[in-house]
Length: 317
Image (cartoon, rainbow, N blue to C red; front, side, top):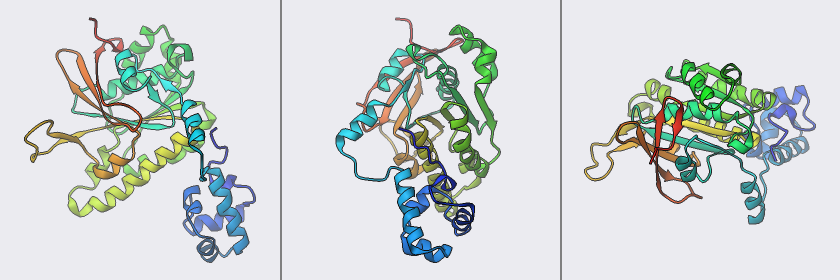
């Protein structure tokens, strides 16, 4: 079940004064408190050791950090919900659709359909459950100015939905740099539960990080910030049972002579974060090929879908 505690001020027994001391000492998240020792928490905030122990225990309970049986993990996985992509082929590849409580990454070259899938999911999440939706709203974080309301309108019409209503249920924001991108996700911990949001899109995840931290000398700080951002998104997905979808660019690897010379940008930090990684590539005409690159619970495979004026669909046989 999603946890009710979403910030340190919600922890039982923490008043405004204690919360302020924790934040001043740099303990601004539940995770930061959960991994601290009682001694260091007490020393850096000036609160009694017994209080520090209680706060740490409460933070760990809120984050559900404890031993679980394999059966409990199975039951948690069975409660995960899925959003249809509009293509049965692509849904089948993803094990039934885009999952909640998971980060799904779509990466590929320009024009492979990353943004089209994001638009389609923003509409489809609003469908009733028997049509592959969650009867919920979406957040669209745009880093590259690729969002088009016209596409939302035509996709909504194709599904027999009221386009204006559909657009009202998509919270859109154009972010201006990587710090803004991180700050926006922080705000979502309040916005998501208040507005029945079940899909968060970041299109694209790496745009600003690449532009603002070029060269090897900036790589360490870039990866640190990116790691923090991805953990924010993972926590958001898990706490509120939200599907998080990120898109990513690719770069050419000159050292690869056989096979695919492109790889997603972001390095090892990004490799370890998403639950499901899907590579998209162009085929003939409006056909696109999706391939599972990494997903611990899904077999490797490929699926063909098409991008039509009505949205993401299966190719006509």
